Image 1 (tube, rainbow, N blue to C red):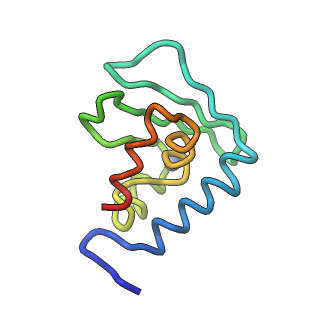
Image 2 (cartoon, rainbow, N blue to C red):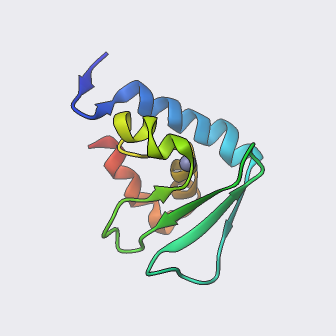
Length: 104
Ligand SMILES: [Zn+2]
């Protein structure tokens, strides 16, 4: 398995799989009407805990999630792209290009 600095292909692919198999199928993703400091906010509910994903529409900063994976393991191995961020990006066409960061 190829492993690059700060990046791990299996870690990324595991999170894409979990985004599609668990988040998109079983969780609820709700987009808030109000922006917060320039970010579009999504509430992720229906999992063991609720989390918040923040997407910057102009991609000035990478997407952020309040879950522990985004703060720790995903940060070390998948550029912080946890399954919640991936699910939000997959389900919102206007932000889908921000998935690119996970492939570069
Ligand atoms: Zn997350």
